[in-house]
Length: 320
Image (cartoon, rainbow, N blue to C red; front, side):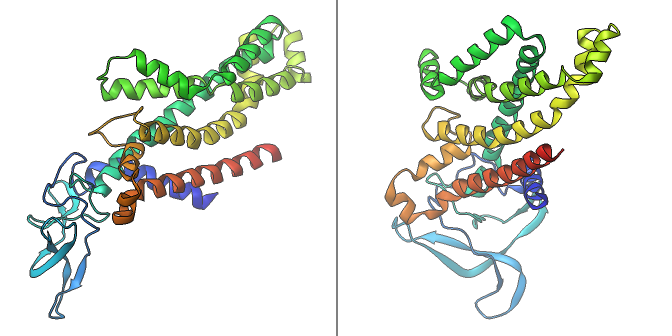
C-alpha cells in the first residue's frame, strides 16, 4: 500500500505542478517537428568531451518522418529558466516523450491531460460517495417506504446503460460545447449514476449500527435523529465511504479516458489522456510512433496504484 500511495502522491504532485514541470504549453505547436521521436539528452559530444546535459537540433529528412541529429551545435538543457523547470533554446526542441502530429510535446500534454482525467475521477467519485452516503443512510436509518423507494430507484439506475445515456445527452446539446461544460457534464453523468453500490453498503452498515445497544440506549434517553446519526451511526460508515471512493476513482478515470477516446469527452486542443490516445487509433501510427501510447501506460499505472490502495483499505476495514 505504501508504494502505491507514494506513487499516487508523486503523480498528483506532478499534475499540480504541470505548468512548471512541462517544457512547453500543452497547445504550443512546433510544425517543423511532426511525430518527432523522443529527443536524446547527451553528456558527451561527438568528440568525446564532457558537457552539462545538452541536446542537438534535429531535422526531418525531406518529409520522410525520419529525424537526424545535427551535431554541429550543442544546446544545453537550461534549468529554472523561463518559469519552467527545464528547457532548451530554439531551434532545438526538448521532446522527452516525442511529439504528436502537430508537433506538440507529448510530455507536456500528458501532464496537462492528467488534470482532466484524474480530476474527473476524483470529483465524480466524491459525488458518488456523497450521494451514496446520504441516500444509504436515509434508507438504512428510516427503513420503510424510504428504503423501498431508494433501493428500487438504485436498481433502476444500475440498469441504465450510461454510455448510451451520455450519447443521448450529447446529441441534445449544441454541436460546440465549451470544455468546462463538457467536463461538468461528464462528472455529473459518471458520478450521478455510480452512487448505488456505496449506498447499498452504507445502508447495510447503518441497519446494523441503529440496532446497537448504545444507539438504542441513546434513543431511549430521547436523543434526536440528527444526534444519533451524527454521534453514533455516521462514524461507522467512514471506512466504507473511503474504501468505496478509492475503488470508484480508477473506474471513473477509465470512464473519462474511454469517453474522450470516443470523442464524447473533452475535445481538442485541451488534452486528456483519452483524446491523446485517439491519435493512435490507426495501426500504422502505433507502429511508426509508439510513444503515442504513453497516455495508455500512464492510465494503467495509475489504475493499478489506486486498486492496490483500495485493496489495502478494504482489508483494513474488514479487519477492524
